[in-house]
Amino acid sequence: MDWGWIGRNLDLIGGRVLEHVALTAPPIVIGLVLSIPLGYWASRSRVARSILLVLGNIVYTIPAIALLVLVPVLLGGAILDPVNLVIALTLYALALMVRSAADAFAAVPHDVVSSATSIGYSAWQRFFAVELPLAGPVLLAGIRVVSVSTVSLASVGALTGIENLGSFFIDAFQRQFLTEALVGIVAVLVVAAVFDVVLQLLGRLLMPWNRRNRRAAENPALLRTPPIGGVA
Amino acid sequence: MIEFRSVSKTYQDGTAAVEDFSLEIPARRITVLVGSSGSGKTTVMRMINRMVDPTSGTVEIDGVDVATREPVQLRRGIGYIMQNSGLLPHRSVLDNITTVPRLTGVSKADARRRAFELMEVVGLERSLADRYPSQLSGGQQQRVGVARGLAVDPNILLMDEPFSAVDPIVRDELQQEVLRIQAELAKTIVFVSHDIDEAFLLGDQVVVLERGGHIVQQGTPTEILANPATDFVATFIGAERGKRRLVVSDSTPAIGDDRVLVDGGGYPVGIIAAPGGRLEAGNPNPKSRSVSNKTDQAGDA
Ligand SMILES: Nc1ncnc2c1ncn2[C@@H]1O[C@H](COP(=O)(O)OP(=O)(O)OP(=O)(O)O)[C@@H](O)[C@H]1O
Ligand SMILES: [Mg+2]
Image (cartoon, rainbow over all chains, first blue to last red; front, side, top):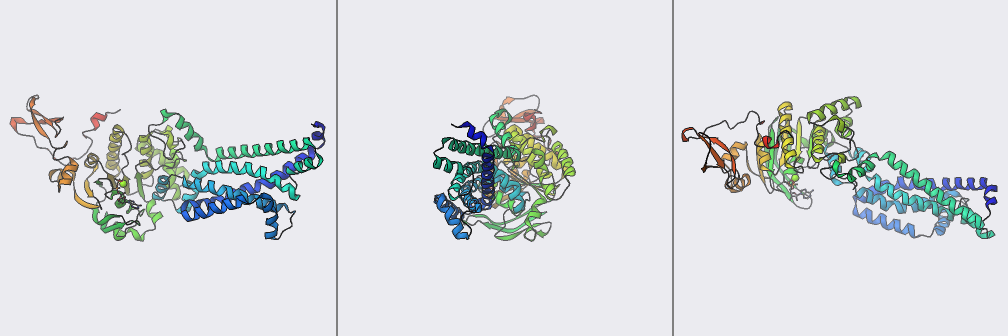
C-alpha cells in the first residue's frame, strides 16, 4: 500500500467521486420516476405486466459494455459522451425498478383504494394521496437495490473513457498499482452507502406512518384488531 | 328519500347480484337491509353512491336520477362507513376525518375544528387525534370511520356492516351511538347487516333480502316479527324455535304476578307481569331505543 499516493491525489479522488455521483444520481432518480407510471400500469393490466416484465428482463440481460456502444450508435451521439452512460444506466435502473413498482402498486390494499373512491377521491387525487404513498415502502426497497446496482455498474463506463471512480480500476490494472484499485473500491462502497442512507432518510421523512405502524405491530397492547393494510 | 325503481345488476362475470329491485327508503329514518351473505345487500347500497352502476333501472335521490350526477361529487355528499373502517392507514385520525372536507375546499382550520367536534360526537378522546389507524383498537377505528362519514354533514349515511368486525360489547356501544346520533342529527341512514338483532334494534324499516336482492319482506321490526312472510324469514328471525319464540315458564314462580319467560332453547330471557293471569300489553313503537335489551349487559364499561 502506498498511503502517500492517496494524500497526493486527494483532488483527483474527490473529483472522480463527484463525477461518479453526477453520473449515477440522475439514472436512479429518472428510473424511479419512469417506473411509477409503468408499474402502476402493470398493476392494473395483466397483459401490461407481462410485457413490461419481459422487456425489463431483456434490457437487463444486455451486457453493459454492449449497451454503452449501442446507445450512441442508436442515438447518433459521440461514443465518449457521458450522456451515453447516463442513458444506459437509466435503462438498467428502469428495467430493475419496473418489477418493484408493479409489485408495490399491486400490494396497495384493495379495500383502502375502494374506500377512498367511495368517499369521493377522484382518480388523480387517489393516485397521489393514497396509492403512491401506500406503494412507498416497496418502492423504497426497490430503489435501494437499484441505487447500489447503479453505483457499482457505473464503473464500467470508464472502459469507454468516461471518467469516474471506475477509472481507478483501469489505471490500477495498467500500472499494476494495488493502492489505486483499493481506493476505487472503497470510494464506490462509500458512495453506495451514502446514497443508501440518503434514501432511507428520505423514506422516513416522507413515510412517517410506516415506522409507527411497525412499532404498533410490535406492541400488541396498542391493538385489539390487526392493522388494516398495516405493515406487519 | 331514496328510491330504487326496478333496479338490476349483473356483474361482468355474469353474476346476477340484484334482480328487479324496487324500494323506497324514507328520509331521516334508518332502513336496514338484512340478509345472508351474497344476497346483494352491498350491491344495492353501492348503487346509491354510484360505486356500482345498475345494469337496468334507476336509483333516485329526492327525485333526481343518480346516473345524471357526477360520481365524485355525488360521493362527497354521502357518508360511507364500511366494515373495516376503510381508514387511510398513512393518515392520522384527524387527517382521516378531515379528508373529505379538505377535498371539497373547506379550510384546514375549519376542517380541524369540525373534526374535533365530531370526535366528541362519536366518543373519541382528543388525544387520539395524532395517532395512525393501526394504533387504535378496532372499536376506535370504527368510531373514526363514523366521524369521517359525518364530516361533510351529509344527508345520507351508508353503513355497510360497520360493526361486524368488533367484539360484541363494543358493537353494542357503537349501535347505541348510531341511535343517539340519529336522534340528534336525523340523517337518512341505510344500514347493511346480516345480524337480525342489529336490524331490529336499529331499523325503523327492515328489509329482508334473499339471493338476487329479492325482497322477501319489508316493514317495521314489529310487523316482521308479528307476521314473518315466509319460513325463511321466520327461521331467520328466530320466531319459530329460536330465541324470539317465548313461553311462560310454569316451573319457576316469580314475585307476585310476574312470570319468567324462556326462549325456544329453554333459556330464561325476561320477566313479564301477568296480573290475574292476564299478560300485560305495551306499546310496540319505541319512542326512544335507549332501553335496549343489551345496554344493561354492556354496562357503562
Ligand atoms: N365485483 C363483483 N364482480 C362479480 N360478482 C360480484 C361482485 N361483487 C359482488 N358480486 C356477487 O354478487 C352477489 C351479491 O354480492 P354482495 O356483495 O352484494 O352481497 P352481500 O349481501 O353484501 O354479501 P355479504 O353479506 O357477504 O357482504 C354475490 O354473489 C357476489 O359474489
Ligand atoms: Mg356485503
